[in-house]
Length: 104
Image (cartoon, rainbow, N blue to C red):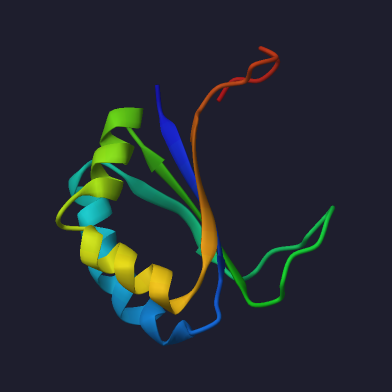
């Protein structure tokens, strides 16, 4: 089953992002992951979001691969840079529909 990482990042210090994206993308791809979206362009249909918010959705082949990536030696220094440069919330969820109404 595929797993998805959804991150909502408050871009308080955006200087880290360009180098981070350039160097992290190959690490994600090397474990079979891929970015589905990584953008500040979004429309908030409900609730409130800060204007300088980056939303990222990644797809991984499995939960264990996603967790291993997030905790990996290769990603750890970039995770530290991201955390220090911009706070956010990161979720990991399975690609499934608990109501069994949609194919994912």
